[in-house]
Length: 290
Image 1: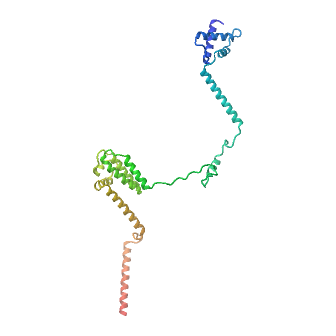
Image 2: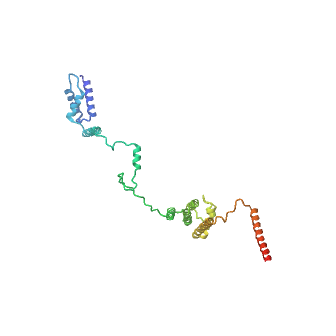
Image 3: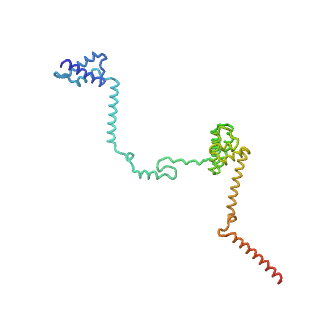
């Protein structure tokens, strides 16, 4: 081998040592001497064997500790995979590992313990839900108070008026008048968002989504106060309930015959009057005979 071939073989061996993470000496001259000595020992005839020289350098100087740890970890992982594969092949399949048909699962879930003991299926019985629901009126009042507390008005002068509309809307929602209640809540929101103090219904009409009825109610509340407005609302509710109750008790009083006409009613009235006159004349004739 000439000098150029020797240099090429040495450079190739040094490169392979670096790729294999071999701990070569820090001094480059000393590392070249070690590589040349390993090539000389691995030579058969005139041709050196680079792989044999690489193994000799590894045995002499060893591998970097971090790379050696990485190799050990990879070897351990492969060994664990092989063990797991052998266990899965040798271990018999149990009933738990066998997949059940979907119909069987559905049938098993449908067969529940009706007594609630859970002894048949092995599952804990489900606790019955406590039916401790708050009354509707209490829930509505809490909701109204929450709306009042969490929604301050931009102008503090409109806060009381907005709160009154919220309370009025909550009362209507509790009575089942959903449309009215939502309308009151919408007016209350517009009052809270108003920048200027609202002093009349006409001024409130300039706000969006405030109609004539809402403006009239604003004037009424501003003049009479909240208590009068609430009392008026309760009176209207009582009148509606009374009228509904009277209509249900005497349904025949307000119902006339569909086929009867005003002329027929007058004819019937005339016949009744004639019958009464005939009766009176008959009584007079009996008195004369007596």
